[in-house]
Length: 347
Ligand code: MRU
Image 1 (cartoon, rainbow, N blue to C red):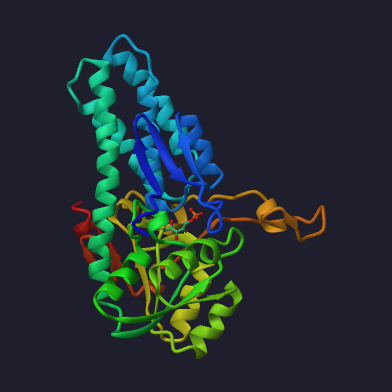
Image 2 (image 1 turned 90 degrees about the vertical axis):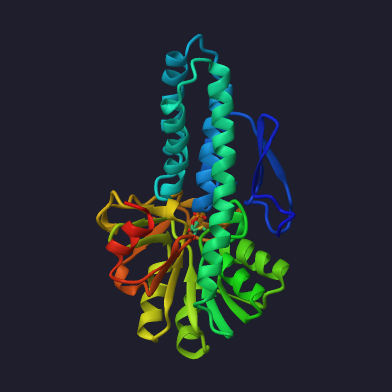
């Protein structure tokens, strides 16, 4: 997977792999403006919480490059609404606004009077966000690998792999690190309706990585948790509240409850950029509602009768009591979570 770049800076543009075309087509897109970045994010051409953090940061850097301003104050005044537009592209993964706000704060805190210097500063900081995410994934992977038995069958949901991050992955980073440590793995992959991130992206990453993967439809997870000799579940996260409640792809909550019912540990792997200590619990996490067409159709193919009412929340919240441990780049946090999460985030 090292050769596939989820996102990269390419001389004044941002190149992303179009994840809606994977696994059968490798199409790269050049993003030139923050508006194009917002559109790519909303269309899920780039997705996954940490990758959205990097995309948001690069989106603001592109915005900065497009500003024609005579002074630092004018530059910052034009930059702020661009930041707002980017943050609003998708609401659940906190990494998006975290990446955007980090760049905005960097520009606001800098002393540079020259617009050109501010523009360069934003590009450099976005590249730093990307590099730090890659390093965080490798560190959290090494921590998480300790939780994986020498021979293990693992279940995962959605895609928390290299494609969802700057590279290597969170949940899949843990599995990659376990493999690198010589552990023998098998992975059940939930297909993850409606947009099939499991079937299209996780299954692809695991096949490329040479980790034996079995694709199942989401409703099979309970059956295999009860009968399949699964040693643990490892998933990513879009936002983790201060009490350890976890928002992740719709369907994660059901998997967590079924895991607990069957005595299977349920691990969440996420960088600290996914932890939102400003929210006391998962009840305050905004849940994105997406287009009904994602449920009534698979791709372009219609399934349901015209006129049926549809609900399509893209995420759910798993209460902390179902989460056995949260794996971060700073180490593994066990319940009760609040103190441990604050310590690991340095707050
Ligand atoms: O809607 P998506 O595809 O952006 O949702 C992605 C997930 O829910 C992932 O599990 C999460 O972002 C963690 S990615 C390391």
